[in-house]
Length: 322
Image 1 (cartoon, helix red, strand yellow):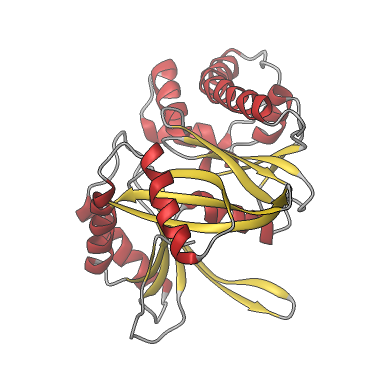
Image 2 (cartoon, one colour; image 1 turned 90 degrees about the horizontal axis):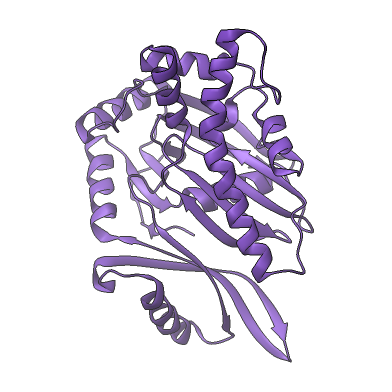
């Protein structure tokens, strides 16, 4: 469900481009009778720093990545960068496309506090169900400011990239997890993205998304800052420690290991508290459902033993996305 989909005249096989707070990832995937195959992957990490990169630095890194990848196309499916879109899951009576567009705008006015004329709103029907002999559409609605889209389009244009579509991270990760076999349609799971500057929580009920929450103030970059303060080191060294430290469930006996463990734990416990609150809210609204397991993604999912650590805290099995 792209927020923007454009017709592009130039030739060349499109690629996927993920712009994040800690780096940029570029990939091309082929689909054949055997399934999906990753045929090209290139990545460029940003310098470890306190604040996000400015647009000029971002454009230069995009150009460098495209040059190094050797891709002979400028056409890309990209993610929405630099914004936290409003995402809402709705159930509406079955209706025509024209009626649905009007209903979506009306529903959007209930949860969007900004001027709707300054927003881009898109939606997708997830599935169709029947209740009391009446058909219903279960759908996801996404809204973001037009200025955000315009700024991203300008940045991509300066880097020589022609976007075919601009999509939302949460939906892309959901489809990636589903395609990779991280869960089955009958499972109820919580999908947790531990990004650099935020943690996103999405509940997937029987193979479809039904609930989402953002913890905007908790991310893996907070671990770097905690390590920096506790060990009196710079952010580069803190990042290296975060990547290589084995996060055991129990506190280590060795003094430095204990300091590192507790610094990381202090940040993760804030995220875990938000995850538990979100799941409690979900269970209060859907008491008949259960959560079978958690699937984690994002840069924070690369920490060693993070899956076992979260499983111990949440009390459910935890897997890292393929």
